[in-house]
Length: 229
Length: 403
Ligand SMILES: Nc1ncnc2c1ncn2[C@@H]1O[C@H](COP(=O)(O)OP(=O)(O)O)[C@@H](O)[C@H]1O
Ligand SMILES: [Mg+2]
Image (cartoon, rainbow over all chains, first blue to last red; front, side):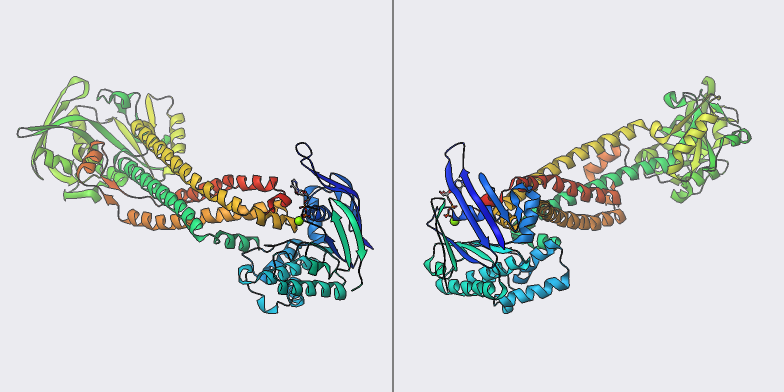
């Protein structure tokens, strides 16, 4: 099953002044259960592509289908609802709401979804356990290390039971131990729970863990390979 | 959850929140305390003149109130007048009043001489409760304001000579003993009022015993005034009489009150504009600092409307913390000064007395004043919250999260 389909995606920033052609025709299909790294040098268009797939930005032209739906037709509010129900996001850093504890951060998205308390509590504990932070349940982000914060972010991204998780350079701000740790958790979730991950990186250690590597260069896909782990 | 989130958010910058709430506190505290003292002072003063003398509604001969002439008298027949009365009027109090010169030895002063029905008058203005020396008048003698004793350097049981112009130019002059001394809260009344039995006054001024200058309606509730007024006006339309309520009898006072209140309201407006700037500064910082965070929240699926509501809550909470504490402290203060009115002394006191006001500042514990403050803060903060709402409306998560 295809969770993401893009055809001929183009994105031009500042079309009227100094146009920047960030994406110049990207065709990409992601299947359920894949563990895909989008790689490429800085400025190659990774963030732009993930933003468009995640419904955070709209392409200049091209076709995009997420979870079987043409998201280009959605209004801004519909797009917000769509993101909440279908996509988990992990950003490079400062993902969490500073005034909420680890548990509350995870719970927050389920609250927005209107899930009853008993169910929220159960799922929050399961997710904290899955990312190995059972003992940090009542800690605020500031009391957690960068790696722990990213793990809570992954747990939060999973909370809404999304079709897939998008992570833009999730390890860029982490030391190598935390990087390995986070990758282990993501890989585990992928293997055992069949969670679909699409993440961007330019870190070779992260690329080595991917099972599919899509390389972007100057806004086009220059290679797309499946790797056996 | 949004409440909890908003509550915690406002304490992220304790100093900023406290300073902002404190500015609201001071504004609300000042505004409500001053408004209560002002209202209390006016209410008290109007009560003094209305309850202690004027009454809420009076009937006179047409045009009497304008010239106050002893020649412009009404004819009063108690039996006949009854048909004009409603349940709201418990009694009708007759008076014959005019100016007179009071003299004792070589001292002479102008006074207001009023012939009264002692019993009915007492039911209306409770003068017997304010008797400080002597006794009530029955059918002879004078009841004088306390201030007159000082002015004329006389004492109880002394004889006072009264001289005036009587009905249709007759000479009016006689002497009477002072049988009682009354204290009036209104300095004007205290220094001018001389009362005597109605029959004695009619004799003094040379009028018939059914002639009066005024009839005061004894009305229990202030609220009944408009109704009494319209009833009397329509039923007395044929007679050569005028019906006046206390506001039209004392237009200067009513105007002064309106003017004073308007002035105070302008002050309040300025005060609120000043704190609005403070609140707006805080909102500006609150909004600017958190663009990245708003970007995250919208990205992960929080609708902008919800986010706007959360920010509104934050702003309103800061405002209401200040407002509620301000109202609370002001309530204590106002309650205290309601029970223990401020007594002015020295120059202030003389200034107040010069305007015929008692030098007393009682506060009125007026719930609407406090509610109005809370409402004003709520409205101001809500109006201010349109700014972050606008920022959020324009927010693009991708741009908000760049860096
Ligand atoms: N908002 C923007 N306005 C103008 N140019 C942009 C904007 N965002 C990205 N770009 C440009 O688009 C290109 C791709 O950027 P990006 O997608 O961030 O690449 P990557 O994430 O691979 O570093 C770069 O040349 C970048 O400078
Ligand atoms: Mg990038």
